[in-house]
Image (cartoon, rainbow, N blue to C red; front, side, top):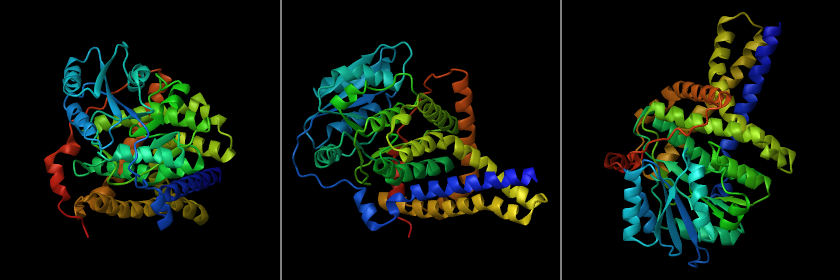
Length: 423
């Protein structure tokens, strides 16, 4: 009897969690008006703000120069690029210094910390920022030349303290897991972050984030010991009542690549999960004024672990309902999370079609099959990353496991997939 009750309670909890997550994920598509409100408004042609664009780069000599050149092509004229390199990384330093020699808008700052990570690098550069707004990009980013003009207008037209632009992984064709990884980004930046901004609590994305320089300095910059420094900054600024605006346009997104191997993806997701756990334990989110904000914060920061748990438990629940002798009512309840998972799969299939349509990418039948077949295996990877994150945090291991980049999103072979869009 107790076993049946326990199974029913867990099943109902999983069903509720999955239903809420799906509803939030669909936020941008609820009505045409909501979808239209998530986009950048058209710039008015004025340039009122200047930008300091931080570009932390470690062992990124293969992709750094391309990113710098793309940033230099910006239609906005008031900006500087600050490339942050490590004192022990001569290859990347050489690329950065070569770019600085060619264009005075590029400057190089050297990070001399013995133990290096992204927040320490950006804190090193913060005192050198001369712009009204600090923007953050990654070394492999492909940035649209009109982005800064749109961000400038967004700050002025909304009175924002922070503007979060869209980031999109593009090379969905590279592997079965890159397909799901790209779709995750699509739902997160296209929809979910807009809901967070509306509710007044937002874990910022890793780049294409723009913060007023005085606001960033007053907040003390980034937490040098946090593995999810972007999330942490968003939580602290939300708790301080700062206004965050999120805008997403497929034309304006910053394009990136997925991790090049499953091991690399596992390490990246481990770092994010561990960072979310660190932010949760810091308890800055408890300073949020409204109970609903604090509940959203608690749920969001624990989501990676809840997702991993549900990915393992849902198949187990179905097996229990089929093979064990449990009351009919309990057996029915155990199937509820599976029903929600099925609805989520349908939504993902529709989302993949929309993703391909928006980015002019040819989505074939094989990609839909990979999306569906890869779901359980991707959940296992997420579960492994969550377990590994908890293990590392408990052991005090907070070293930064770097994700290497090879420019797969710039691969001409990837461009050939843009010939058609599946009907």
